[in-house]
Image (cartoon, rainbow, N blue to C red; front, side, top):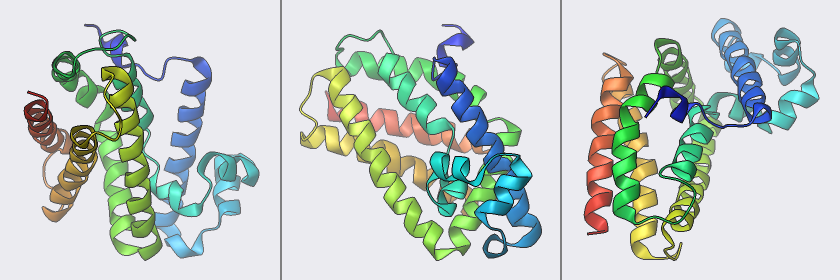
Length: 210
């Protein structure tokens, strides 16, 4: 499978949106580092990013999401949506494709620049209570998205216990990996931590559907 398999989402509009949001987020994080999170307004971020404040609100909704937004999330969800074709597949087949995609996804999504930005985001999440609260809400929403998508791909009921457990394992397992990396003072590459964590997550989900 080629690297093109993980160049997701696939439409030009989606790619432009992700690129715009990533650029605005980089500008925002640099401003927060320079002046402090609470001292930087949406309007200041917009001016520095050369976009309108309404564009920032349209993309992110809240100031907290300038920190919490993760450009990898829509790409990973789209990878699950299209892995092995678009028809219903057995969980075992979807899991096999996930194992094959893992090195491609980590290599393309966890660049050194991406890890630097994740480090910035984690530091603000730990320090600012409203961002921490927003992270919990964001992860629950992502869990629901993954659960619904997994059910659509496999034909299972989205309320089935195994499907709920698979979604929770995937999302909160990745959160645990991030917390572990932060707990080590961000030593080493996140790519290595994530690879180990996701292999374990895939193994656990595979056991659920045997």
